[in-house]
Length: 171
Image 1 (spheres, rainbow, N blue to C red):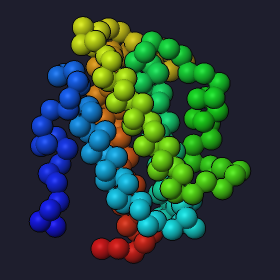
Image 2: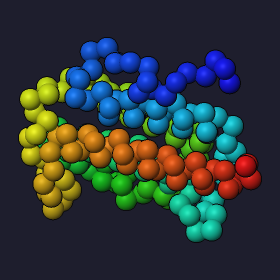
Image 3: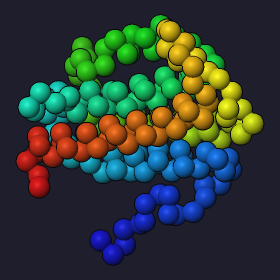
Image 4: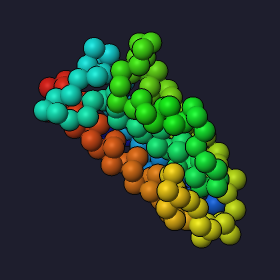
């Protein structure tokens, strides 16, 4: 435990990351570290279990990845494509082909990498630009979408943590 790193936000600025987007990047990196540690030995047979009616770990893993991709799509002022809409419709449903928890963790890791790359390339002058969200095109801003991606990721990570602990009977 003595060699454990401080939380990501306490490790200093990330190179080449716009200053105003550092907190978003820190939160996504923190979530990735915690999620990878949490799921490292998680049994695949529990992936779609819903203890006490809670969302399954599989749902949280799918949802974490899907929301990141969707919010960052909206931040680019793009609409969701058919593949993204199909992914959304299938979140929480066990896939036809048996994905492992490791597969879903790796997909989340890729989404974080893509999000970080987009944050790197974001011009801070665009952060207050309005962006439409969803089919109704509800108004948000680029910074609003990025901030929500960070807080939403951490919220679902917390829910995943509790669900995994209940399923594996850890204290």
